[in-house]
Length: 98
Image (cartoon, rainbow, N blue to C red; front, side, top):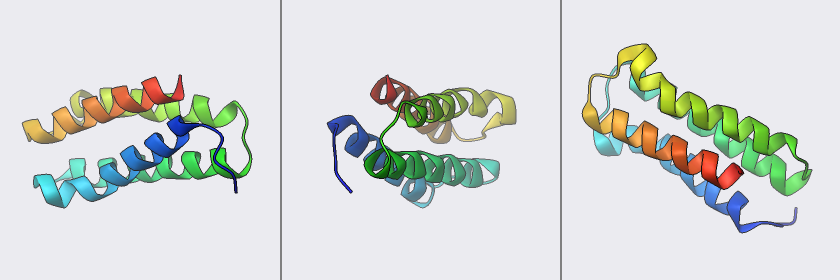
């Protein structure tokens, strides 16, 4: 396992934040499970970038980032903190994947 780009490490940290943020920020409902699931997806794509570097993990991370940006309005997050966390994290994931 070799780290080739600092962006992969930063994406991993964003993914870890997404997994641990629901209890820290006090989410409830669907926001908890969607944030954790999408965070795990970011973590998995980051690890894939360490093990088998290719362009596919960037595309996968971009799709997850787009989902993070759109899901608060499609599902209807109740808390403003959940919406802000999802949108900011999604934009970060997209920028880091690009």
